[in-house]
Length: 527
Image (tube, rainbow, N blue to C red; front, side, top):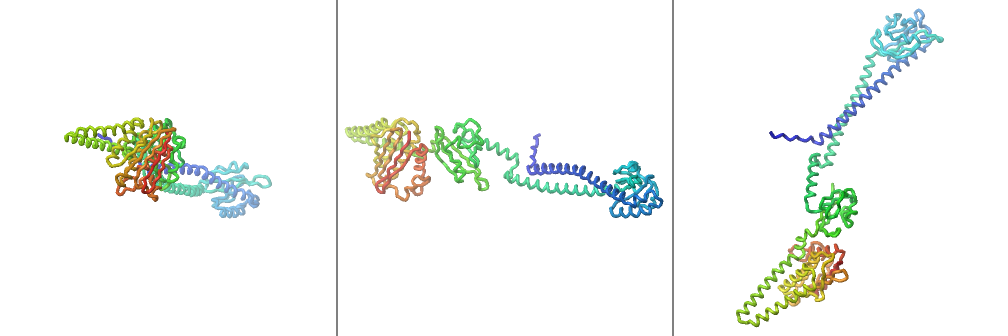
C-alpha cells in the first residue's frame, strides 16, 4: 500500500508549544525554589515570632516573681492570656521547674503537668523551637527559660497550631500557584504574538516551504545561462551562480565580500542609492564584454540590495545583429543577387537582339565596376565582416539611387582589441541612419561619404550624408534609448547601442549637423 505522507507540524504551533513548554519548565522551577526557600523562611519567621513572644513573657517581673509560688497562677494566667490574645498565639504556657503549668488557654489545665515531651532542654537553660503534640494538638512551639536573680525558676512555651501554620503556608502557596498560572497565560499570549510576527516576517511560509523555495532558487540560479550576482545594501555579495563565477573569473567563495573588489566598474552600489533599475547596459570585464541588467531589491518599498544579470556579448550577437543592421546586410546581398539577375536579363536581351558588341561592352562595364570595388575593399579592409558589410551597403545604395562613396585612402588592419562584431554594429547603424536620412531628399542629391582609418593604435570612422540634417531641438536626444523620429514605428535603439559600444571601449562619438546640408558622425576608438 502507498504510505500516507506525514503532514508537517505548522511553524506557529511549534513555536507556541516550545515557548509554552519553556515557560512551564521555568515557572515550575521557580515555584519549587520558592516552595523550598520562601516557605522554609516563612516557617522560620513564625518560629522566631514565637521566640520573641516567649522572650518578652520571660522578662516580665510578675512572671519571674510568681513562678513556683502557691496560687502564682492567679497573677501569671491573666498576664499570659492577655498577651496571647494580642499576639494571636495559640497558647502561652508558663511552667516551673517541675513542669507544672501556671497559665493555659484552658483554665482547667492550670496546675497540671506540661504535655509534649520536648520541654527537657528548656529546663536545662536552652531556648529553641520544636514541633510537638500537646493537649491542644500538634503545634509549633518556642521554649525560653525564665531566670530570677540568675537562677532558672521555670520556662515559657509559646505555641502556634500546626493547622494554622499549614493554613498560612497554603495561602502563600496559593499566591505562588496563581502567579505561575498568570505567568503561563501571559506566556501563551506572548508565544502566539511571537509566532504571528515570525510568520509575518517569513511571508507566511512554513520552514519546509522555505527549504523547498531555497532549493528551487538554487536550481534556477544554476540552470540559467546568465550570470547572476546579488549584493546587500552595503554592497556585500550575497548570491553568485556558477555562470557569474565563470564570466568574472572567480574560483572561490566571495559571499560577504565587497563587490567592488571583484567587479571594479560595477554600478550595483549606484542602483542601491538611486533605487532605479538599469537595463541592457554594456560593461567590460576582464577581456570580455557583457550585456547586463541591474535591478534594486525592495522589501516594503525599502531598497535592501541589488541584483545583476549579465551575459557574454558573444552569446547575444544574434540579437545585436538584428538591431545593428547585419540582418539588413544579408537583405542587401539578396538585393545584389536581384540586381545581378536584372543585369543578366539585360545581357540576354541584347544578345537576342543581335547587339553582341553592346552586350560585350555592357558586361565589361559591370565587371570592371564590381571588380574595382571588390578589389578595393579586399586590399584596404582586412576585416572580412566589415568588408562584407560595405559591399552589401554599396549594393543596397545603388538600388535606392544613393551615391555611396568610400574614401580611397581608407584602411582597416586586422583587429587587435576591437571585436569585429562591434565594428559591424557601429558602421552598420551609422550607414543605415545615413541611408534613411538621404531618402528624404530628391534623387541626384542622395549621397553618403564613408571613411575608416586605422592608425596610431586608434580607429577613426566617419559617416557623412547629404540628408535634411537634425533639428536643434532634438540634437540632445539622438543617443537616448528608445528615441526615434519615425512615426508609428518601433526604434530608437541604433544610435543608443552605438554610443554604448563606443563608451564600453572608452572611445568617443560626436556629430555635426546643419539643417538642409546633412549630418556627419565621427567615431574614435582605441585599438
